[in-house]
Length: 61
Image 1 (cartoon, rainbow, N blue to C red):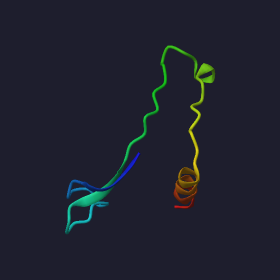
Image 2: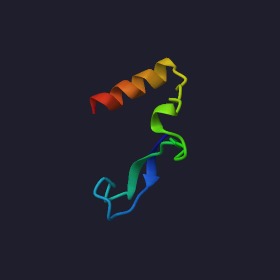
Image 3: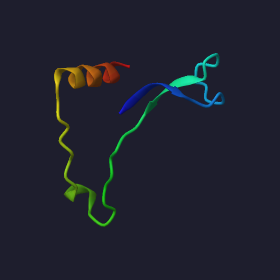
Image 4: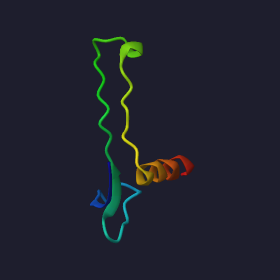
């Protein structure tokens, strides 16, 4: 999840120092610590054209 124009800390250099706004990113990626990593099922991300374009832009950055 990407949240543009969120209030950020002025101590964070990525925050716009005039407006106090930044972009925040949240990832929900839990994994059970009681299961071996190789037994964890990889999440299947539903795709759409917009999601594919966003992921491609993030990879280029």
